[in-house]
Length: 423
Image 1: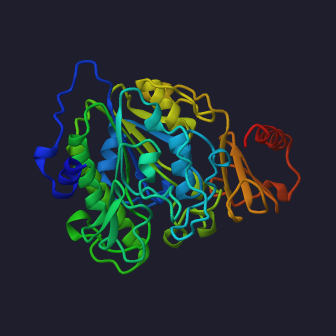
Image 2 (image 1 turned 60 degrees about the horizontal axis):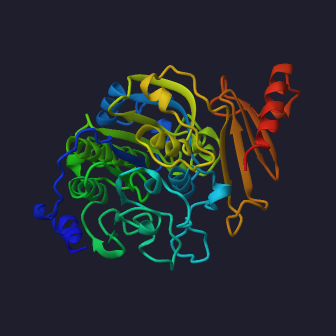
Image 3 (image 1 turned 180 degrees about the horizontal axis):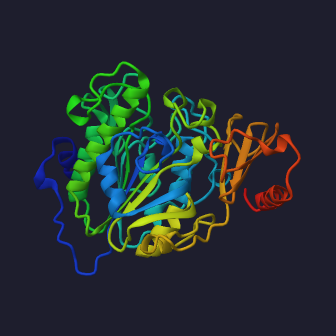
């Protein structure tokens, strides 16, 4: 423990573990989540006329595989729990964002089989935001969920902002006044030298979650904007710059890099193509459709239109590097990594939420969405909405407001039947 504190708090090089890479070692895994980043703000998706300037992401896109149809959950905590467990929210119990002040909210059960528990021969750490622990429960919760170390914030940085936040090191925190986005990259870089290979790093940037602000000027090119939409863009470019610093410090020839958003763009900084009530927190595409890029050894170049769920990362990693797969909802997208044009095996995308206390899988707040890539159904206790995404990506035309064509009726009936197979 003293060695870790020295390495991560003081940056002592002598505390680093020797990292000679044994012959035949599986790739290191760097799984990066971007907070509140939908495809409308990410390069190369083409759904917004003015994407954010993110040159590092553009380089990853050029050298890896970009997935065009990826669904997360509508908010942070359910996505992170589903990503780690390979299970949908109704199964792991995290149906909505966990509030930092309520000890009665559900948290990720340490008994859940998470990615670090199943990867054969890997040492693991989570860097940055956790947001899977209820208030009043142990601050070592990430360690109970399978990680060897946690360095970062337990929740969002809070109203005090990115220059005044709690940074935890394996359960002990101190107030941090350095810029959170920069600290996350620095901590991740130090951990790559501390852990023996092969390592699995789950790196969760707080950006570009509120509070919106102007980052340090050397990290972005947006000047000193006063409006939140431009500040959000500046925060994303600053994060892109810091991810570039992180990637420059690892061997990309031996590191599998996965970058994805945890949910859609927040409503206050959404200015198209979706309406603000179709953004983060909703089951519309603006709330659940997220960017994902994969780069690394054995990964091809190009784009994939396979249907991918956030739960699928779990099985894919196990298939790629070995381990004991036990995630019931996860489907591997490993074939698309080596050959992006390979058809996917997932037939349906699924997402759900529940805003009703205590956030369980029943009650009037339970909402679900399902899609086969073209047709999409959103259902809750108050009704249904049905869309043809091939011509209506912004989901402005609920087809159930008029008689359905024979083709649409077939799509609707299929989704109704398929929904019975999901939680």
